[in-house]
Image (cartoon, rainbow, N blue to C red; front, side, top):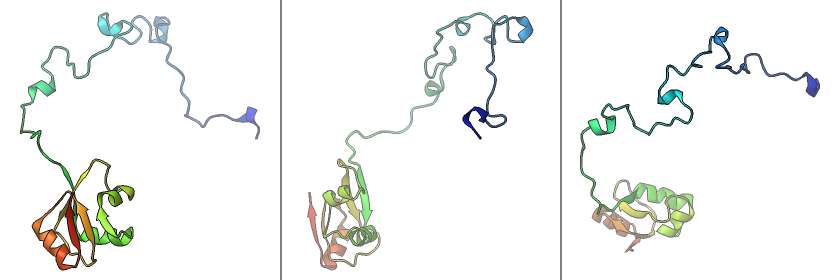
Length: 148
């Protein structure tokens, strides 16, 4: 086998459709563009969501709900997850810096600890928010909680 013998696999290549080259080709006259009008011309572009004068779907649908612009979005961690991550990444403290370094949160994320699961390790927790039950469970296990 040499370079000049190589050919693409059967059915891998297609002949380009040559439009506007006479009626005998089957793609003559309007070259597959229909009859006249803006879309038959060169340089035609349609705007996103334009439905040709029909009321667009985004305007037909009703507005729903309410978005509170003052909402604070937290990344939640449960006590069971904290136990797992402390062992997995050998953390001495469960803090935003350690979570970011290990790729568990983004730099700007806020973290809240919730009380699902149990915690066995004695851990220092430095987060933005923690539930009352989670705080009690951490302190019962011998750990400390620091709010940022």
